[in-house]
Image (cartoon, rainbow, N blue to C red):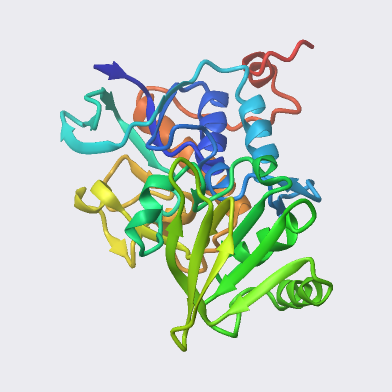
Length: 338
């Protein structure tokens, strides 16, 4: 049984900054995430896409943001439990006992749920034949764009992800952009850019088509796409990318007795605490009047939740607010030499 002041569920940006705040005020925490890497949606869905609304950071990618947040945690000894999902939570003697799907057990007075959109997986292609090529030639997210350089890439989808990646990969790859409708759902500027590249012959744009079949033995060789009029054409393809959005589920969290609102968790705005004492929710997974699903909002929520955790973790101590610019105590925890 692992005893800790705070258990954070979710290793995305919000969870990482909450961990920083928790350790800064003298508490200890451990982090559980069902993904196999640190960074949450930033790393899983858009590691190379630029983010423009982080305060004092004009532009950074999801990967860069994650690396900087991890760097910010270097002064602290934080244990990550990756590839683990919290399955069971129960109250025992004023503390929470938590069990993961791998049998790891925790006891803690505080749980911070920073699970982004909860458990999520991409909507996938219908043809069963796609399964044998999955994570080899068929992908639903991009982790390393360099593998597509000089290759024939067929991208399916009509939203921002499909449009943005079609534009990005057209610089180094032969790109087919295939959508089941004539109209696209993405930003108009991206739609206009794709049409401009199509007119220049840098992207082959095919609308009113859907994937019918894939061909190849050891590796993908070509695909069949079918038009609304049932006409089928074959395209040589080394890779197929599908961007159809995510199927989002709260997973086991839904059975923890928390007040839910459309797959989000209701919290107050003083401590970001749920209806269960000692369980907090921050980031995209929480809900309250005026909620904005921005990373910067999650940072604010995590800072307040961290300080609320102090009261339950150190019931006999009084929390005293300090500034990192002037506090020798905080500087010492950060490893700053004065």
